[in-house]
Image (tube, rainbow, N blue to C red; front, side, top):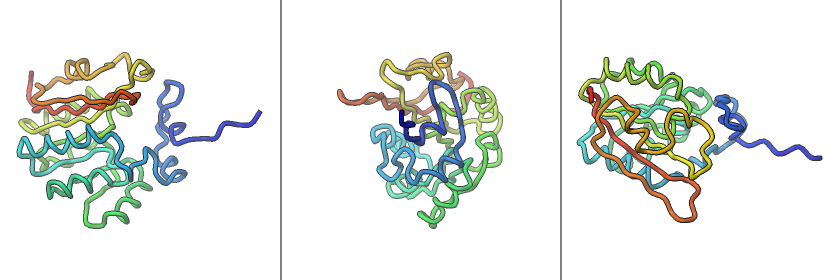
Length: 206
C-alpha cells in the first residue's frame, strides 16, 4: 500500500490535533494555503473594509506568512502593515517578494512590542493560538486600550473538528471575545465547504 503524499496541512492541524511546525512547512512548500492566489476573498476584503470604515491608519498583521495579504492591504489603503510571523523562512521570503513592506520574525505573544499601531489583525491565525487567546486578549487590553482588534477566521460547514470547545461559528466567537464588537460579516457560496468571517472589536471592556 503506497504511502499518502504529505501536504502542508500535515504540518499545521492533522486529525483534529494541532501540529504547528510552521517553519518546516514553509521550507517544504512554496505556497501553503495558496497565499499567492489570496484565498478566502470575502473575509480578506471585509478586513480591508474594516480598516477603511474605522479610519485605521496603521495595523499589526500577526501571522503575516509570505506577505500577500499585507501587499493587498497596502495596494488598497496605502497602509504599510507591520507584519510579524513565527517562521523565519516565511519572513525571509516575504521580504524578497515585497521589499517595500515591513516584516519581522516574532511571536504573537510579543504584541506589546508594537504599541504604536491602531489595530491588531489576526488573518486566519486564531485557530493556531487557541490556548493563548485569553493571555493575548489581556495583553491587548493593557497595551492597546481604545484601539481595534480585527479577526478574519474561516469556519468549516459541519466538519469542524479542531477547537470546537472554544467556538464553532462567528456568533460564538463574538461572545468569546472580551471586547465589544463594532462590525462583522460572514459569507460563503453554495459550493464552498467553509464560511468566511471577519469581525472588528474595539479594545475596551464589554
